[in-house]
Length: 240
Image 1 (spheres, rainbow, N blue to C red):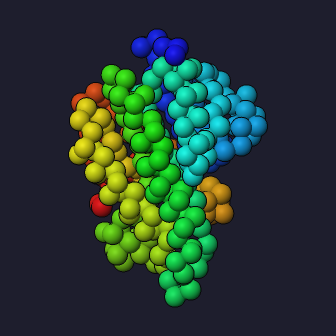
Image 2 (cartoon, rainbow, N blue to C red; image 1 turned 90 degrees about the vertical axis):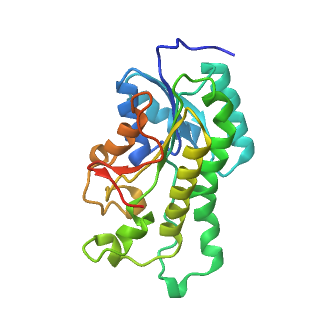
């Protein structure tokens, strides 16, 4: 095990080869942090890492594969000795069909990545996070997971219809609050990036990835003893 200087923050971002994940890596690396870039495709991750200034380390990581996650833990342990910040960013939208056309099988891949993925990765990395002086976990959720927002006629989200993706993010929100209550000394927060132009929505979002990562970076850089168990976007608190 190699122990990195305790003054250097060690972070891991899952699903980090494009969109919000890639921009999060860029922004955290710019802070002088050591950032592990989680990528299912290590070659793609290496290409991106070469384009980013700072201490960016490629980590082969498939959040749906326990063996891959276990291997990633060993790699981070050997390279850094601990983990300070885990950003559970990996997510997929799934099939774009309405509630009438949705079948149980539509839920499996989306919940596998969006719900079980964060649980699998968090559980596996808790021993390394326990070694941190300020362990932080950021769950990248969505306003589509908010019951209040999706039932507010003044919000765009209320006009969208879907069972799978929204419910996966609602589940992730509950997971966030339960971890926050159950992990003393940790700061566990969910964030809504907002409607950001990424591959997840066919680049139809109105925000840039810089704007979309504002809430992610804010949650990753909370001060010691600051908030935990919250749901925020770049403007502030988001209703559950």
